[in-house]
Image (cartoon, rainbow, N blue to C red):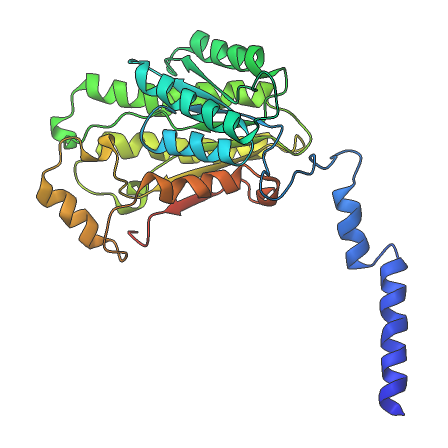
Length: 305
């Protein structure tokens, strides 16, 4: 009898809690429907970025290419920013559009889901034109920036020329700043806006030969954290992803086979990463599910640091 009474009292308490303005579940519902911060459009679980437009700089190769491909698989329309040879970007865009057409064969004509745009991210005019091109291709609402363009060389500080230093900062720090500045001005408000910058786990490992490179990435981390706070109230989040060694041309440049093998041994997973190990983390940060992750540096390195 006593158990029955306790059960009835507990049920009544929960009923009162759910109907009260002070109930935790009620608070959760109110936070999600606050008119000052409307919820982002709900999308199917298999395409959480359906209807969103993502700009990916450095998108034609390495990690950037994997990110662009992954975001498209999540339903986003993707602007692939590249510099130099257009062939890799054109090939990637053609592949993404072909895959979309095959999956959406009832639509005539097939809808383009990707475009390639040449951009020097260290040039503010070209960065603005990149966002203009995204709007021209997919409409005025832009939602995601992934600033993956980067440059790397690995001389020791005593051997680093001013030109090498300036180039590293021009692409990695200045380029990320210009893209973030444009995104802060132009991404959609209201909960769907996402900025993801790229740092490096070498900011934590501080290995010899990475002085200039690490300095640029430390600047990116600090700027990203400040940006997240400055964007308060907009619904736009800003986070940095910091991979460890990843099997890309940038990683292999200037390294002996012995050094590459040593990097693999230093990782508890026994290998260097593949770009496909990093892309899903970026993809998650771009979705509504990551809306409470903001101003963070996510080290994606298999335990390397």
